Length: 125
Image: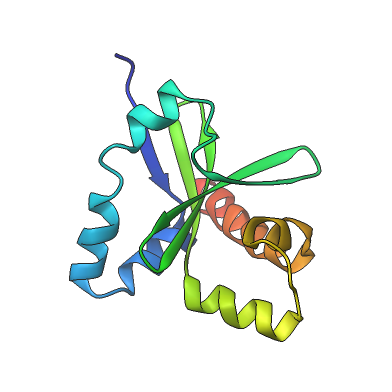
């Protein structure tokens, strides 16, 4: 079996670090079966957001949404956002769409993801 890594970029690692320890352990525990799912399926079990040729997937863990992208080594986690944050976002935006569809169409969401991606690139330099 080839190695599988779950890579938290600086933004998602920071989001995880700000959570209470019990919640951190719960979220990390939910990643246990993820390597097999990601390596053995076409990721249909996860939410999917596409824009400009880029595909992100959403993994739900209780009241949190983990946004990740498949990578040659496994996956890269870009954001870990509270569901309540997303509800507030929908309310303020007046969106009446499905969660993935609403995020997929909103440029602010992609800016949020790009900010996390940029933080990863700066850390790697």
